[in-house]
Image 1 (cartoon, one colour):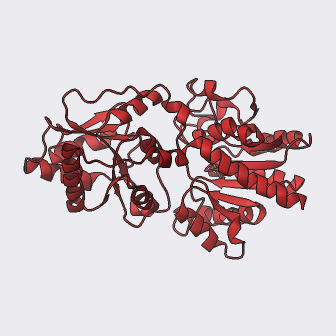
Image 2: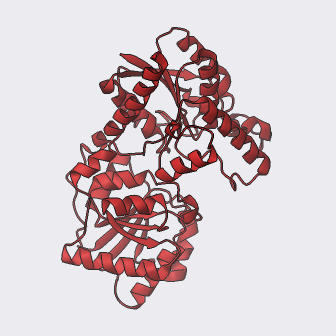
Length: 414
C-alpha cells in the first residue's frame, strides 16, 4: 500500500473550523483506495479553541504527528498587540520550524510516496514546499480558498508576498487542487505557462457517517414554513439586508406572518449586529437568531426544516460555502441568495436543488420566496436525487484524490 503524508493545520481537537473535515475525512477514507495516510499537524496548544467532539473520528490506523507551534495572537501578544512580522504569512509561522524538522524525520524513513498539504494556513504549504523540494517527492497542493488575488489582501505588500509564494507553490507542486470550477479556471489563467492538467477541481463535501444518527427528524410542530441558515453569516460577504427588506415587504402585504413562516439564523456569529437590524425592518417575529448547537443536532435541524438558506455575495463567486454539500445530503430544498454567475448558483442549477435569487436584489428575493412558499404549499419542492447526492460524499472524493495521487506515482515511475 502506498503512503501519503497529509500536512494540515486544521485537525482534531480544533473547534470552529469546517476546514478540518476535509483532512479528517481524507485520512479516514484514503486507505480503502490503496493509500495509507499519516498526518502532520500542530500541537493543540496552537489552536484558539479545542474540544473532544471529533477526536473519536480519527481512525485508529492513522498516525498523527503534532509539531510544536505558537499562536502569535494568543502567545506572543502584549495587551492585545504583537509585532506584525511574527504573524506573516500567518499567526502560526512558528509551525514551520518544527513542522519541517518532523517532516524531514518522517520522509527520511523512505515510507512515503507523496505529500498533500492544505491551505488556508499558508505555513502548511511552506512546510510542504520545503519538504517536496528537498526530497523530490510528488506533492499535491490543496487550496480550499484563493491564497491571493488582484484585490486581496488589501495591504499591497502582504498581497505581493502571497502572490509571489503562490507562484512558487504552483511551479513546484505536481498538482494544484481547487474546490470550485471557478477557482480552478482562475488559477489556470493566472499561471498560463503551467500545463492545464496541473489544476484539478475536487469540491468540498459531506460525510455520510455524520448523518448516521440524524435520520429521525421531527418537523415544526406549528406546521410553519421554516427556513434555516446554519453557520456564520458575514455582514459583508453574506449581507442579509436585502433579504430582510424582502421579508418586511412580504409581511406588510400579509403574505407571511409569524404564525405560518419562520427564518432561523443559527449561530450567525454576529447576532449583536443583526438584532437592531431586525427591529429596524420590523421582522423580529419572523426571524429567530438562534444560538450554536452541537454539530449533529444542527444536521437534525437541517433535515427537519422546510428549506435551507445559502448566502454568497458576488465577490465570492469562485467559492462555494462548505455547508451547501451538507444541505444536499439533508435532502431539503435550498433557497440560494447569491450571484447568478457564481459557482454556488451554477452548482444548484446543475443539480436542480432549489431556487436562486440575486443576493442584493430585494424584489428578486421576494419573488423567489413567493415561488418557494407556493411550491411548499403544493408539495412541489424539488430536491436532489440520492444517486446525485453521493457524488458529493467525502468517501467518494477521497477516491478522486487517490486517483490524482496514483497518476503522480505512475508518472514518477516512468
